[in-house]
Image (cartoon, rainbow, N blue to C red):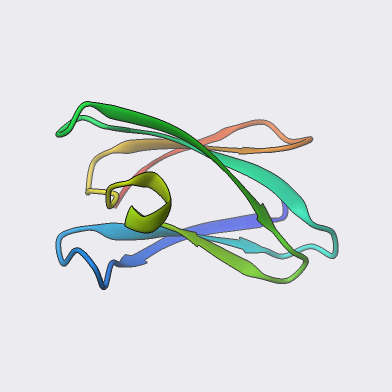
Length: 88
């Protein structure tokens, strides 16, 4: 999968993180973040597109909350198997 995933500190929530998804390929990628916030008991399935050689960020503005250390998140990219990761 040509998508590289990482996290950075949120500037809107000092205890939260923002998911960074960088497309390393030359075609656009249709993606979804599947996340559950256990603190507020909310679930999201948020679609986003990442252009070729571009980065998309997903955080409190897109999901309604910041990602927290230890949470499990899923990333689905059309044409690839889902990736599940634990927020660092």
